[in-house]
Image (cartoon, rainbow over all chains, first blue to last red; front, side):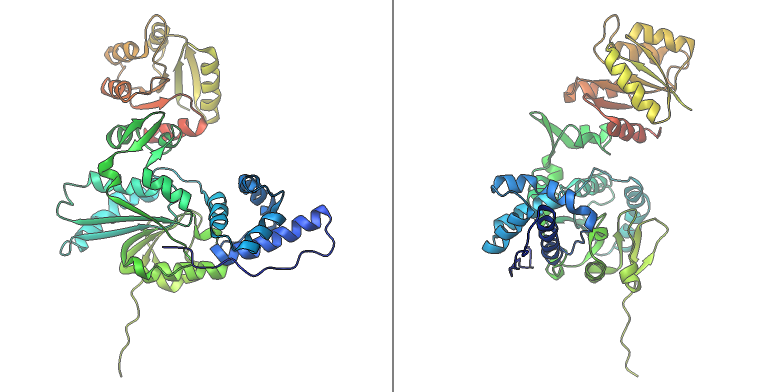
Amino acid sequence: MRNTVAWSQREAAPVSSGDDSRASFAFARFRRRWTALTGAALGDDKRSAVERRLGSVMRAHDVSDLFELTELIERNGNEALIEEAIDAMTTGETSFFRDRAPFEAFRARILPELMATRGRERRLRIWCAAVSTGQEAYSLAMMLDEAARDLRGWSLEILGTDISGAAIETARKGIYTHFEVQQGLSTTHLLRYFHREEESWRVNEHLRARVAFGQFNLLSSPAELGAFDVILCRNAVTNFAPEARRGVLERLAGTLVEDGYLFLGDAETVDEAATSFTPTAHASVWRRRARPRLSLV
Amino acid sequence: MKQVLVVDDSAVIRKVARRILEGLHFRTSEAPDGKLGLAECEKMMPDVILLDWNMPEMDGLEFLCALRKMPGGTTPKVVFCTTENEIGHIARAMHAGADEYIMKPFDQNIVRSKFQEIGLV
């Protein structure tokens, strides 16, 4: 699973370059490339945040500003540098059981319903798209583990993906800081599913083995990932430009089974792909609408 | 508004904790060790106790065991807040009747998250 949009095609530098016009030009060029690569929209107000986030990348490559960094990327078509920029830009806020309510809805209502409707095939596939450093995927793994008695004999798959290779590497290791394991995670869960590794906490092996992680760009086709019963894509689609957002939501719909569930972030909707989903009783949770059947008259 | 008793021998920690808790809309009181903490509970049983482990006079675990034997002492939620962050310590505290456990250093996000876990926020 790799990023599929190439970063290429150079543009001319500004004719006159006062500090601010150079910075504005650099940001505009970076923004176009960034949107093409990731689908993410960057408003004018994000310039300082972008410069701050990319500060460590600029220092590591001995360039003084966004203009030089964009030049360096475009000059070399440097895949490794693009990866570094993505890692710096996309390390998202996340936590175990983030926002609680959607996870409670999954545990109390949606999982029991899926267990009832899939009782014959006894198979459940869950995709945590834009999983960042993995906390949401492990949260689901804990919930499935707690339902283990009722899920005996089932094939359970949890896949976590993110555009950032560094985030996925952290997720795979399952090593979290003192602060991270105290965000959203009860002490009961901490004792049951984690152990100390030096100053950090690591997810126990039996839980890590239940989650697979891979790098994936949501602008790509997820067809190779197969069909899912549940997709969590929380607090990610809001970052996309409207047209890219529609594409992402349609692709997520395409990979959900017909009665499957899509979990978005609290402030997110499926407006751009409303015909593919129907609302549920749970905020920020949508259900895949049945695909229209072709009929021969 | 719920009442939180902060039991910690560090005046700085008590001050920081009270500021965080008041920001989360709790009323607060404080005690510098377990013995004086129990005296506070005898006067008025709080809704929640934020409890350090290592203190002079009576440590947090002794306080918790004594509290749970007091009339009304099973009612307050007890959240340990301590530098003791080995699994063995955490398990002992939970086994003794603590409701949640905060490892120092802590901040407002951690306090809010742990208080959410026990239905207080």
